[in-house]
Image (cartoon, rainbow, N blue to C red; front, top):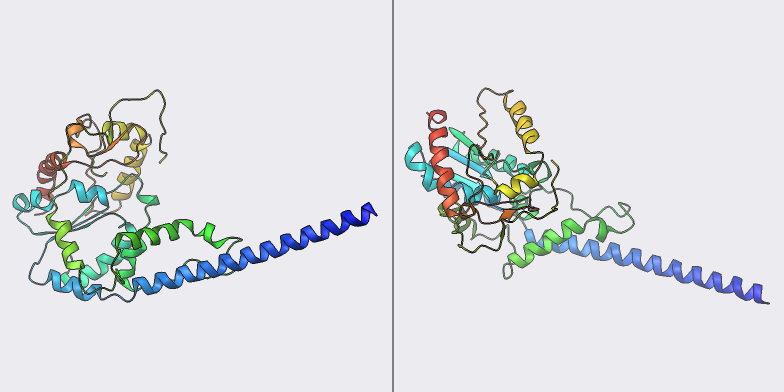
Length: 307
């Protein structure tokens, strides 16, 4: 009698478990599909190419600057335009990785022609830098959205967590706008924001910059705007990274590698030149004063390359 009861309880438990797993599977697929549908409708169809053309018309920039937030803070067009004698267009901002740069360059050449000089701010983590889908939606690539493959994994919400987090962060950033990419206004303002950004001042007492070396700190495995000295020590494979970029640049006669991320080339131990970073921090941004110092070095090194 007890054996029969035990067997019946096991069957009941397995039946409940099967129902729970089936409900979880349906819930996971249904919510994943709903998120992707909302995402596609949110980004919408973009007329970015036309807006870019309108913005570039009459400006005729000869120098194009690419990069992420580090280049946005570190390379200021106003520092370079007078010394180089050329107009600059900067398309450096957070979430704009190599894939975005590739598609943007194709549109840029179509609308403004091949630039005389391209400055590419290279981050230590460039090989892991994914372009934010908010920016990628400008190009109307109609790529397959993550999460539509029903058999892609046991839990699509978990599998696509990074993608979903990015989308919800974009929604929060654009709260109040129903179509961030397709909205007919805003990009021209963003172009101006990027190209006229004067750099961010660094406070004298800056808690975002870790200047005291702790006994132990996280080190990142494997040139760009400089890092604060602590971030340089954290990115411990930096010399190997520089050698790799040099090997790549040797394949092309018109590519020059300018590295400022060494204590010899830039005073990395001055906190007032940086906004953040430090020991255990893999990412570091220049302050307004640091960007001015870098600007003077770039003027000196880019002048012979821009003739």
